[in-house]
Length: 113
Ligand SMILES: [Ca+2]
Image (cartoon, rainbow, N blue to C red):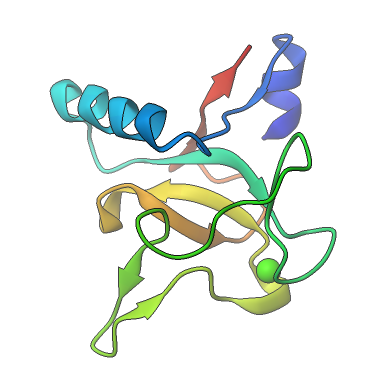
């Protein structure tokens, strides 16, 4: 998914700026999107548990970035070494969610220049 953006001369989106993330959410809200998810440029593929953006800067953990889920209010990221990529999960109101790093027709990359 990263290659897709790089082929366009960009990379997967960096949402470390909370104001930018908020603006993107407001934009999504106006689109009336179907139930699709979006790849973002955060991964812990290099070192399990250490999430970084494509520029190598650390991803902030916890609220208000990562999704909560389940009866026990667990917080993403979960999945250990099997889930090393991050997406905006429609199921969780587009909060960050850890996921398998494989192409999926329901997950679309968001690129930035
Ligand atoms: Ca992981």
